[in-house]
Length: 539
Image 1: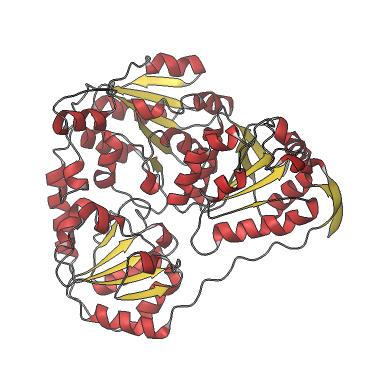
Image 2: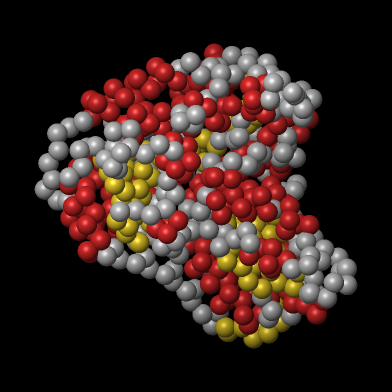
């Protein structure tokens, strides 16, 4: 279909053609034409304004991580783009399909260095350094093709963020534009039969196999559960792969239980993961261990080599292994796995008060509810002490581990799943990175539950300065507002809970509330037990 439209109208139309229903952002002079186009089609694509560009980008990230669909945000160029870069690199780290749509200075001024409003030396180069793919739109006739390619890049192969920029003046240029059908995503390569044979041969001889999952395995849960049962193998995940095999099943081990099982592993089957846990967290490899990798990104097999590597989609790769291993018989190890989990639980129960609070959160949070972590003492502990039952329901920031992402990301998760319970946990430091988005939550009636653990410090910094630097404290202490009064001043519902029992009471009450809820949990600086023996046991 051909019609005369502006570049801005073509962008909005192409987003709708690709199924986009929601876009986050802040309008500005460089993007007025885009917002006019959004207004014209406001019944087909909904806009949610935020109070800071980073809030828009993190909400798009949370939306993408919680759904697997593309999360879209828009911002002005220059400082607007730069304000979103932490969220973009988080999306890159966590393999999330996030689309940044921004403008540029007038087309003839790009690269001239005349000091035009919001000019960067090379904005496109900056975006390309943070994304899987980025491109400039120079004319409306290019829009359908470029937007289609953006979606292919985001969702084909290893998922990741992309960015599109369109100069300020070009957004208003009109031309006859051909809107053909959106391009289909590139199909995954089929697993190589000979590589499957070699992998199956290694696995058949294994006495203590282990399966390790990352975000690339998120849509292969059924096949992976079958493989785990066939091999009688424990299943591990560090962050993004959690819940693909439920940790309330015998096979879904948390990382605390998994560490001792790892020491006896003879074959590791790594599916859609960088193996950060083994290489950077545990660091010690069992003697003679063989590694089989399934990953759609061929570069992964170069970065960390495997004895056998399958370049394919997780579902296809695991299904090929199941077919090659059909008829294999193994004695049940379920009792062994349950015993490992029980022992690990008794060991990490000493990480208090974090485990006590997480027990309450898990008890109140429905099985299909979402938990969004943050870089804080409770967040670190959650990585081994909060069981996860379903894929996508544990939302993290990948290897960036960037302070302050959690609350803003959780808003995007809740927008994506308004009918599910979403709990965001934050430290006082991280929460203040995005506290302004409480206004967004109130204005849009986003029914998110946020728990702020207030220990009046950057907890990890305090611990490290105390233990490794002789108590030379600098920059670790924080002066905070009364978080209950602060939340109420925004128009949010607010509570304070002094211990796990009180937290359970107010969390249960919060499930029946409408609108955003903030719960402050006060604590003393440095009072938390260290979670690091269970995160870096090699140390």
